[in-house]
Image (cartoon, rainbow, N blue to C red; front, side, top):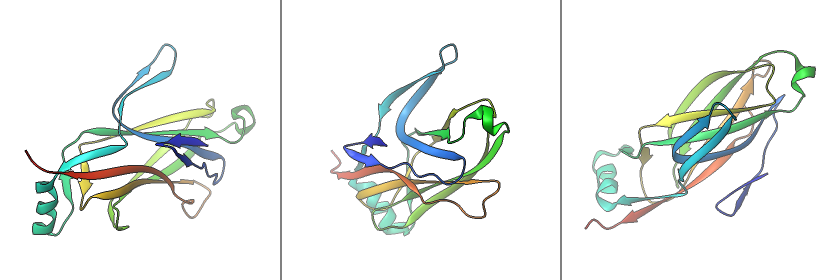
Length: 167
């Protein structure tokens, strides 16, 4: 299990590949020599001017608030790579859900988990956050391997969206 803002995120296994943790940050860097990941400005909360929410009410559609960020996902193989032996194709479904439970966007990606790796990171860059109103949002992550018909139970990365008065 991993911890995010004092809340436990339970890892759920659905096949050979297991989601371990996920975070939101403004920037990340991978040291190619040591294969270490550095995360900068981890985001647990964003403050949005009241005017952005007014735009949602006026247009009645989610507003893209321009705050570039990355969603960092970490997976591990449940079976030792030596025993697994093959590259494992996986599909990832990433969606953002607002405090009312409305899905604001969904992104489907296909990846190949290399046969010689036990762990794998995936970095998704986004130009901003879709918003509708203040409250608790979540990025939902689901995976599906090539031999599975459906996506597994969602894992969540929480994000608090707060309204601030414009100055």
